[in-house]
Length: 239
Image (cartoon, rainbow, N blue to C red; front, side, top):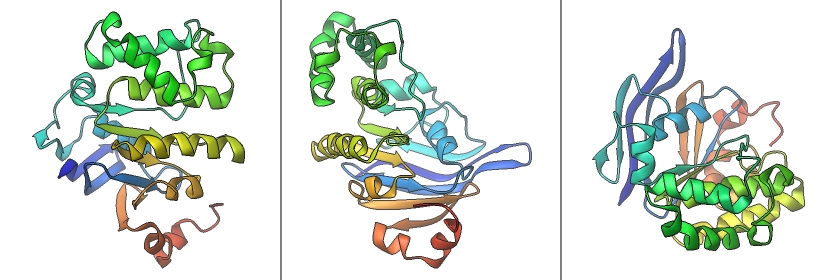
């Protein structure tokens, strides 16, 4: 069963085309990785999926419903959750309060109704011991964990991760990857943009390659990375 399907989705800003007839689908329970050089249109693709950007043409179906013209809030309530490349928590609120806000607004429920779920997510993401500290005081790894936790708090059927491993040390990256792997193993469908390829390929079943807003390949990670075209795109980029 397809959880999300894009059909010829395009988006331009004047002469700049950030999405060029993008077509692919993701099955329920699958983890798909997205790679491509800077400026390839990866974050724009996420914004199109979440409704932060409106497509110029094409269609987006989520759980077999056309959501192309629906707002970001509508899509979030239906089950599309995401993290952002640069964590921006509510710094003067505690870690637990950040989760309550995300869960209440992302699910359209009261804070009382989502409090227990928020606590469980903090435990899953390794933040339970930091529940009562201000988000401003967190380390980078903890901020990344909080960004992941806030996305999970919306109770997503589809979880979008935008370069969540970026800036971490090798050890920190390994810790975060183990958490993401556990989340995926529990049945969460994931689409993950990442430059840290060894982290990405330890979780995902398929890779999609973007370049100048176009899909130039999608398939099993080893075959994608063996493609001469993909190697050419990554020429000069440390992978």
